[in-house]
Image 1 (cartoon, rainbow, N blue to C red):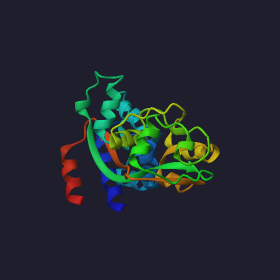
Image 2 (image 1 turned 60 degrees about the vertical axis):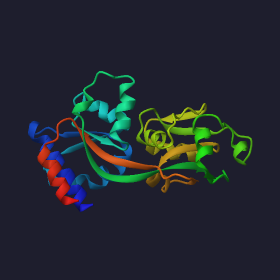
Image 3 (image 1 turned 90 degrees about the vertical axis):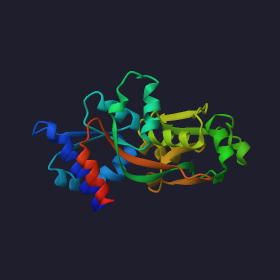
Image 4 (image 1 turned 135 degrees about the horizontal axis):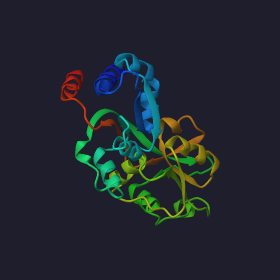
Length: 241
C-alpha cells in the first residue's frame, strides 16, 4: 500500500502542475476504487502529492465522461475498452484516444443474496440465463416461487461492465432494482428476500448477506484514467513494480 500511495501521489503531483496553486484535484468515478483505494489512502496521497483531493464517487463510466467535462482524474473499476464501448453508445464523437490508463490494483466482485435464500451456487450457463432474463424465478433454481430481482448500479457501473465482459452477455433481466452507487447494492439485498445483487466483495463482507458462488472469478481492474499523463511518470511506475 505504501508503493500505491507513492505512485498515486506522484500521479496527482504531475497532473496538478497545470492547475492553479489553490485548486483542489477532483477525482471522480468508480465507487469500488474510491472505497478500496482512495478513501483509505487519501491522507497519504495528499501528503505525497502536496495537493488536496476532492473525492466524487459515482459510476465508472460517469467518471470517465467527466474528464471530457473538466474534471481531473477518473477512478475506474473496469477495463478502459469496456468503458469506452459503453460511452460510445451515447457519445460516439468524444476523443477517446486521449485517454491514458494507469493500472493500480485488482479486486473481486461478487453476487449477493438474502440470507433467507438457500441457493448458494450457480454454474456459468445458469448464471447467464438469469442475468439475461431467461430465468426469472427462484423456483427454477431449487427454491420457492419468487421472482428474481436483480440489484445493480445504473448502466455504466464497473461491476456490470466486468460481468458482461467476462460472460459475453448484456445484462437484461426483466425485474431490476437500480441504485445510484454500488455501496447501496447490499443494503437492498438485506431487505429484499428475492434479490440477487452485483456487489463489491468488501462491501458484501460488511453486510448481512450471503455470497452466491459461481464457476467464474469476476475480477475488476482498478485504474486511474486521465487525459494527459506525463510519460516520465509511466517509466517511474514501471521501475516500482
